Image (tube, rainbow, N blue to C red):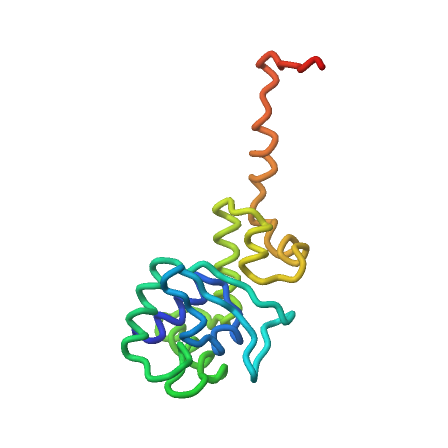
Amino acid sequence: DESFRSILLTFLLTGMRTGELLNLEWEDIDFERDEIHIRAKASWQPKDKEDRTIPLHHQLKEALLQRRKQSDSRFVFGKGEKPYPNKLLVRLHRICRRAGISPITVHNLRDEFASHLVMQGVGIETVSRLLGHSNIQITWNHYIHLAPQRLKNAVEILDWNQRPSIAVG
């Protein structure tokens, strides 16, 4: 359904953690600057207690603007109150069952976001920042196997058939 489509898009186009999505409020989205702000609330802290900004993809912006028209909650994905994580997982499993595929977790959607970025050649440093990892090594260890061509492409930049110009100082 359309309401769950916007949830899936949010995971797939932002790489948010479940807690970040569940605690996302309308005031956290800057539609003018196309940014989503992950920040601490009175009743919730982001992982590693670090705020971050995620660019708002144009497709997600469109879906969220539609959702906002029908919302009466301060929470982007709540109906008056904050949504529950278990309900989210139950809906996701129900959709998988209807589609005839093995159940996935919400974290699988976060992995899809990161994996596709890495496979498209986005640098590990950028992916790490988007995911909100506290240490780039976490991202490197988990996703670098998806970019084996990066090393080959790096050395192919060199061309020693051309006569090198050596600056004499």
